[in-house]
Image (cartoon, rainbow over the protein chains, first blue to last red):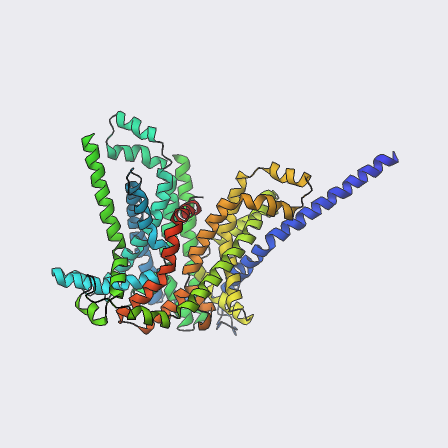
Amino acid sequence: MNEVWFMENIFERVEVLVLKNRSLSFWLFVTPTLLALGLVVFVPFIYGFIFSFTDWNGLRATQFLGMEHYINLFQDREFLNSIWFTIKFAVVSIILVNVIGLGLALLVTQKMKSSNILRTVFFMPNLIGGLILGFIWQFIFISAFDSVGSLLGIEWLQGWLSTTGTGFWGLVILNTWQYGGYIMIIYIAYLEGVPGELIEAAEIDGANPFQRFWNVTFPLIAPAFTISLFLTLSNAFKLYDQNLALTGGGPYNSTQMVAMDIYNTAFSDYNMAYAQAKAVIFFILVAAVALTQVYYNKKREVDL
Amino acid sequence: MKEKKRNKMLLQIVGILLALLWLSPFYLMVVNAFKTKNGIFTDVLGLPTEWTFDNFRQAFIDLDFASSLFNSVLISVVSVGIIIIFSSMAGYALARNTSKLSAGIFMIFVAAMLIPFQAVMIPLVSLFGQADMLNRSGLIFMYLGFGSSLSIFLYHGAMTGIPKTMDEAATIDGANRWQLFWKIIFPMFKPISVTVMILNLIWIWNDFLLPSLVLSSDQATIPLKMFFFFGQYTKQWHLALAGLTIAIIPVIIIYFFAQKHIIKGVSEGAVK
């Protein structure tokens, strides 16, 4: 009797020790990243949110202003312009990047000798930072476009980046050239998962190439659209480096996107609390768009 | 059959033309980097009539390239190393622990991906400035914070492919969690670690905004130095283009050798 009790007690104590040890090791494994994420993302996020209701100058705040900044920024021409410019850019970019990306993916998944080299070439811009790409394209738009324009007598190729319109299309071209190859990679991953027999069966049934794509391939690569739309949208909204390097926001801040407007309000005008209020609105915008899209796409995938 | 062959030929030609179009910005950058200021003025599109290396010599000196390359390598390699070590640990622990708390912590990491950098940028700089952490180690710590979400997400996903029996077998053999992780699990993480490494390397190597807010000019990375350099030589394209060419050479060399891994890594990172 005593012996049994003794054994049970031992087992219990070992079990408690193991459990305790398990949770200790759990925290040992999780704490470093949790601490970094907390200190780098969540603490500043909450801290900034609170100080966006004050006259915070980056170091201290002396009074509570309530919604003042938020009311002001909805009458702020420059901020509203930057939001409108960003939305226009995002819509055009999403369409072009995805059309080009899917087109390139369809091209390089045809069994050709040059497929691998083509993939490598189309993806290459994505290894180089947006800042450097923006500088390279600044040269292309200003000097190369101008020189082709005067060589062939095409007037609209001259004076690029000096107007709002050419600045807009310059950013769109740069963005499409860069992310087209990135999105291509995602479509390739799904296209390669489409069974060849399915396509052949459709071919035997007399489907033309367009029908084969629309009725067989397209539904099978639907998840690729979820991912690609999400990626292009969030990239377009957060674009900063390319904006800074290509147009610098000019002429007269007319090609300034939201990310750059927030930066300039904070670090050129030193209007920290006001810039933070803009940043909060920016967060709400980005998060809302992302969540809507994930929700909508999940629903559609299930329906299919 | 004949028609099919002709179509393939046509596709091949379209592909090559598109590839040339894609490469044309790089072509224009390189050829004009070899021209004199006058050479660019008279002809932008053609090859240089006289090749000059002077642009590269001066750009190399003004970019302080040896030092900025060193800074870039140091910061990228240390940051990515730390991200791999700590994210794999967390991804493992969060996947194996089935408690609600663990699921909640995982959700926090995923939710953090919704917060754009600009939403935390200003208070981040202010707080780290007050803690006297606006330097290299502060930057590396920030990269761990920003990079951990996606990396943990990827490691967490990779755990579904590693059966629990692996853990149990090792525990019976007397290994504790620490040994179990480093001797058994981490080696099995190798494919996903390559993906995590590539994604974070591309991001950190090319990052401009965060280092520009954190680092002083003597610690400048390549993108940061490039920004100052470009500002210094506006409208002096022969020098600016030589600088840009130098700046992307390290990336092109690595891409040449590791392109298969890189494309695979990016693909896996995006699709999962």
